[in-house]
Length: 395
Image 1 (tube, one colour):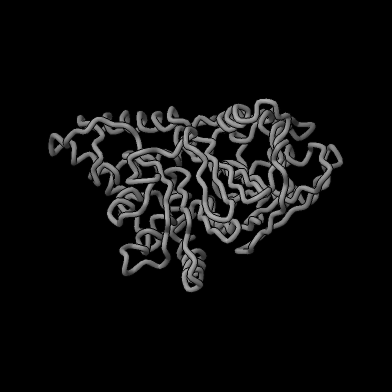
Image 2 (cartoon, rainbow, N blue to C red):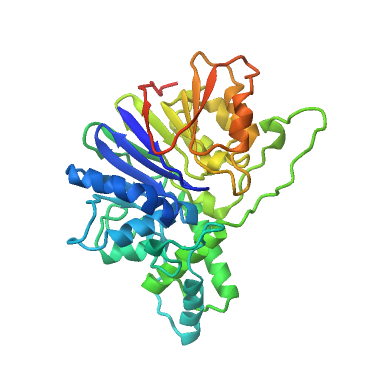
């Protein structure tokens, strides 16, 4: 049995999952998402004696990590913890191989301090939530300082596609599809290029100041579009996903944790902001003979962007339940072409499309008819449990 909540997280992601009574939190939106929705829910779980078996930060982007910083700031110390958290997955700088070094000059420290003063990005039109002020600590520092079990230890190894299946009680399993170590190293290389342009001449030592500057700079980098926003235009008809799709090139998105969560026969594909090509390649590597993989639910990558759901990926995966998390105010996600491509495929089951905001694309889908005649329905949920059925994923 799997049920989940998709919190209103503005343009971000925040999912609380109950898998056979094992609770897992995947991202937490911005600090305001945590304060408004998640904190009270976790307090109620704690009163019932529940813990979070796992907290996953898919990648370093303000709309995914901000609420987790607020959570771990509020959950700071054994005597003050709102809820027990058994394990955390988060790929920060110290999770990657690096050469130890010292901050060899005041100039190096000054560069990092300047990055830290900039803080984390704040959602447009909103002041920083007091729980997660812009000049807060990195998630890495919070995890290390307060002694959480981090990436199976002290955070010095990464969560990537080479990880073994992670098992929880009650037949709950998590299989990590990505990122590859190559994608994580690419983000580290980008960080080094930027700080060297700013005048830094040291090496990326695992130090609290370096951790703070790394996550804050990467979070700003993740907010910058790196794919062309210009699409083909047709005066006569709507274009298809195949006609407008172009792959994501955001290094931060490429570092996103993508995984399969299983509880008995129920399986959920949780894609974070991952690149479609990476997900497709890893699924084919694990199931080379499968023509199609059916999941109980699929969390669409990067809020339904045309750069993260490829036509090839949609030929391989399908589900009776799709989850799309965004308010549509940043980059106008979700893209209508992605939603249409999902429902235009033949299927012998009804597809339910779940959104957490009423967007322009959602409104268009309400009056859309599948080109294949497939059944689908549109649902906008707000802090409600979504119950998933058991679906065999063997394809």
